[in-house]
Image (cartoon, rainbow, N blue to C red; front, side, top):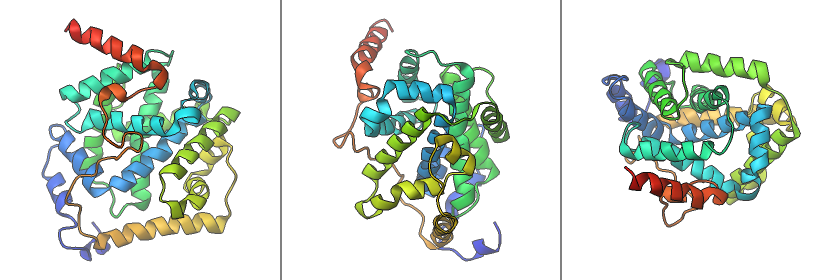
Length: 301
């Protein structure tokens, strides 16, 4: 764990010791819960948010997302729904009845569009590579190989339940998939810029008021150059980029001295202040059809 790990808050590495005692092939749900909801909840969320924006750099994906206008017209709901479907799929375990119901709903939503498997696989790859890259860069410790194996296991099972074939079984496999797909297809389009700006507006809405004036610049500053260019966003001054990234690294170091979380992090959606049901999730234009379809399937089960 390195020299710095010798100085930390009491109990700071208790979860890691627990994780190292588990088997990622059997205990992947518990390992993911400890990693994403206790060890790195904020980092996992930030890494996932930036990862979703990579999708906009693929012109065919950007064109579809732009055409639906979900980000432009209902951006906060789209953001919340994406996170909540992920929560529904993992809170009780990837093979729980709750998870299977969530993935059936996601498949019904995707079924309205002609999306090639290679693009679904790429989007899935962003959801694992994004958080891992963020935690490696800014987390209070590096991820353990057992955590990577468990996160990969859950990611692959998630994809299998979406009906995607031939998925990787290692983190390096997902990284290679992402890098190769971006090498082939990453390019700037006006749709990518519109989607990026719409996503940044959502980030401003959910950020604490004092941080809102800098939200756009900070979001751009944490992007790699290839992503920034694909999204058509303005280059930030080098001093500002260094300051933002340095501040994030400092936060990670300081968190070594923070006591570990006692309760699991759960996303609090602004769209549903009084709670949500699975039937609430999805594009507003599809809700009646989605729920009618789910009801028909349930009545024939």
